Amino acid sequence: MTTMFNNNPLSSPHGEPRGGRVGFRDLNAGYPGRPVLRQLTASVPALAMTALVGPNGSGKSTLLGVLAGVIAATSGQLHYAEGSPPAFVPQRGAVGDTLPLTARQTVEMGRWSERGLWRRPGRRDRAVVDSAMERLGVADLSARQLGELSGGQRQRVLIAQGLAQQSDLLLLDEPTTGLDPEARERITTLLRDLVADGTTVVQATHDLAAARSADACLLLSDGRLVADGPPAEVLTPQALSRIWQPA
Image (cartoon, rainbow, N blue to C red; front, top):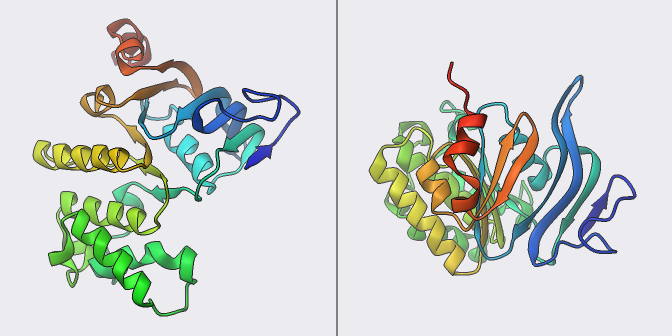
């Protein structure tokens, strides 16, 4: 599917990303009176892990929101190769601790797009939710309130919700931020396993270790794409020192 905001081609005469699961060209986006993304052109490789890296305010979350379809681009082109709609896992802080939801109810929300908001989960829905929770190791937390969980447990529940959407494109906003090293490593391993099983994963991250273990990297600064490609070529000391200026 190609969403066109102007007449510029993407990477081919029809705006299709070459070898990519998602492609965008001259992409601009933001909020009323506050532009965020400026003239981004890149392609997200299919069946790979892509890291979006940059300081706070660089546009990582906005780009994820545009790819997820929850933020509208103001101009440019955006193309998705054939596949299911993306599944979006927001930052943990975007899901309130005070919501009276159990871990299982949270994961079941991932089935809303398939069955609708008001229909009760059917047999297939329950099987998908069971499978996602087992895979993320949170089945034993089903009856626990979301706000009672540790940071790592809660993040795995949210990723299980994304997995329950059964998409081949998973978008995650800072999935390991604020977690201890063991929890970060566990989630990174889970995401690598998803890629191995045929899912394209895109994660915004401040964790340079996680970014360096990705297959591809987009480096953002002030809403612009500074570099993209293999992490070893993008996350160089020189590039990082330009992006993260000392206070």
